[in-house]
Length: 162
Image (cartoon, rainbow, N blue to C red; front, top):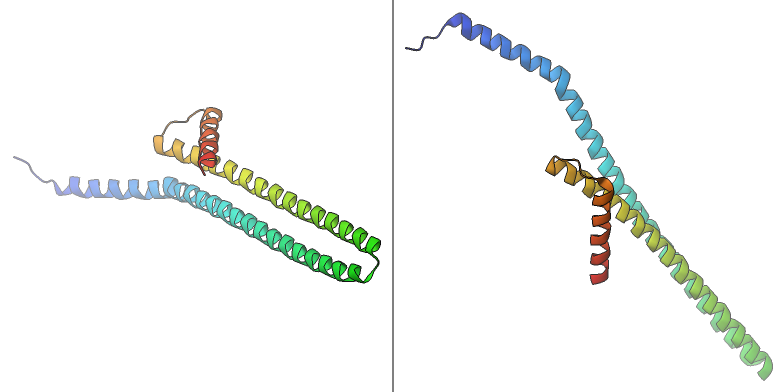
């Protein structure tokens, strides 16, 4: 028959408490620090991505304002050119059209460059996050270059579909 020995029960509880205290001092704080560091890294990455998006929108609005300003300038040039002789009017219209085309081309180029930079940055960040998350979920360290290649191919296929 099973007997409870009070001394054994007390020593078992004391041993359990000591083990719990030792584990809390040695393992708990480092684990919490790692989790907090990862949360901070993810939060910072998301904040940087949001800032990049906001900056791209801001630049797009600035470009639209510049385009609107350029269009106003063109309208004024057209009004002024109507008062001049036919030859001067034709010269001014041609000059205004060329200037507007350059401004529009520069604006499109700047917006496209910024968008490509943001997309590249986001792709890189997503690839790194997916590699880390996959390694943590699977519990196996995967060859990062091969894993990154698969992710890039998937992102490219997704971009083609959309």
